Image 1 (cartoon, rainbow, N blue to C red):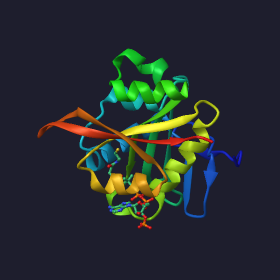
Image 2 (cartoon, rainbow, N blue to C red; image 1 turned 45 degrees about the vertical axis):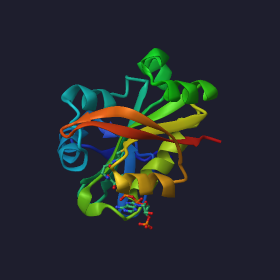
Image 3 (cartoon, helix red, strand yellow; image 1 turned 180 degrees about the vertical axis):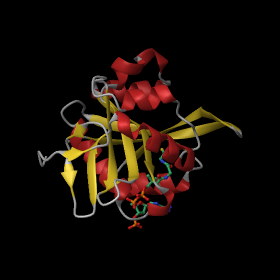
Image 4 (cartoon, protein in one colour; image 1 turned 90 degrees about the vertical axis):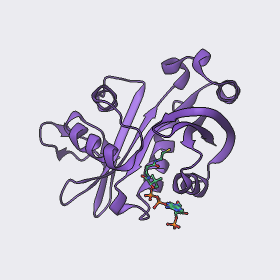
Length: 192
Ligand SMILES: CC(C)(COP(=O)(O)OP(=O)(O)OC[C@H]1O[C@@H](n2cnc3c(N)ncnc32)[C@H](O)[C@@H]1OP(=O)(O)O)[C@@H](O)C(=O)NCCC(=O)NCCS
């Protein structure tokens, strides 16, 4: 924590990390428009206004979202949205058997809901930085962090493996995309 305060277009936000050219800070409602734009370019699923409003609302304590910005232009480079306690948000009964087994074995589990890096800025370490920061932020709340990834998303799979995450299971028909149902892998990492 730097404790420094930077001016957003409407309110003040407190950055968590500062680099020479980029800054990581919590998401704020002023970011919603940029997040939606990046979502449409980076992810196969379009998340609605309610999702981004919740991710950017600091009073929604189950969610935690932060993003990386270019310091000079305040341009959004990437973002990650986390759920601090997936069982409290989603309910164990709504999980697949394999996911339930994983979550129950750790008691408290955090979840990566969305992760995206601007396509023109990928392979520069930004995704790694966001995941590393996610692990630091979630450690007080959970013993493990996990996520689902489309089995055909080869670059994300390579990325999660490089981040030190372990493939735990394959979940059949987890996603319903334009091409029809698609399986997902669960990737997980202990927060020790
Ligand atoms: C997945 C994603 C977040 C990775 O972000 P990134 O900033 O490009 O990742 P990094 O630069 O930190 O990459 C770290 C390592 O991951 C691996 N990796 C990342 N992208 C890769 C790719 N396209 N192909 C192969 N390996 C890749 C590499 O080992 C890379 O290290 P290297 O560049 O030294 O070889 C980004 O590609 C993205 O936003 N994709 C679209 C959205 C998405 O799929 N999100 C995940 C949904 S579950």
